Amino acid sequence: MIDALSVALPSSTLFCGLALMPDRRRGTALAQGALVAAAAGMFVAITASGTVAGLPPIRIAAIATGLIAAATAGMLYHLYLGRFDRVWVARGIFAAVYLGLAALFALVFLSLF
Image 1 (tube, rainbow, N blue to C red):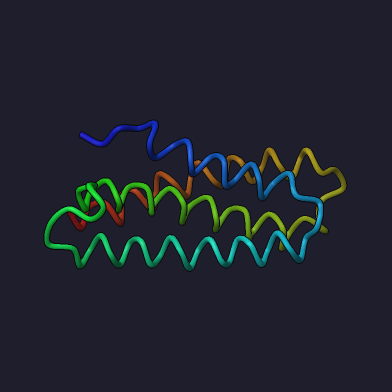
Image 2 (spheres, rainbow, N blue to C red):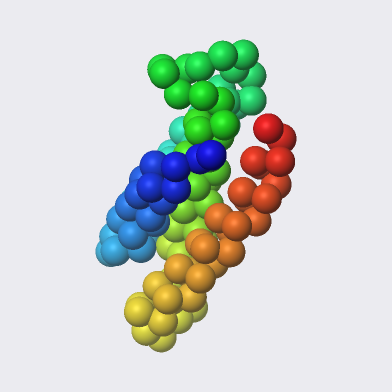
C-alpha cells in the first residue's frame, strides 16, 4: 500500500508554492522544470527492476504522479492567471484542477504497475 503522506506532502507543497508565487514567468518556468523532473522520476520508476534509493518503483511512480499533477496545475495557473479578475478565485479553481488532475493521472499512470 502506498503511504499517502509521502505523495501528498511534496505534491501539495509544490502546487501551493507555485500558486503563491507572484512572478508569472518564473512560476511557469519552475513548473516546467518540476514537470521534467517528475517525468524523469516516472521514467525511472517504469524502467526500474528493483528498489531505487531504497524505494520500490510503485512509491517512486506515486510521488512522480503527484508532482506531475501539481506542476501541470501550477503551470496552467500561471498561464491563465491574467484571465481572472481576482487572484483567489483563480487559486481556488486551479486547486480543484490540481485535485482532478491528481486523480486522473493516478488512474492512468499507476495502472501501469
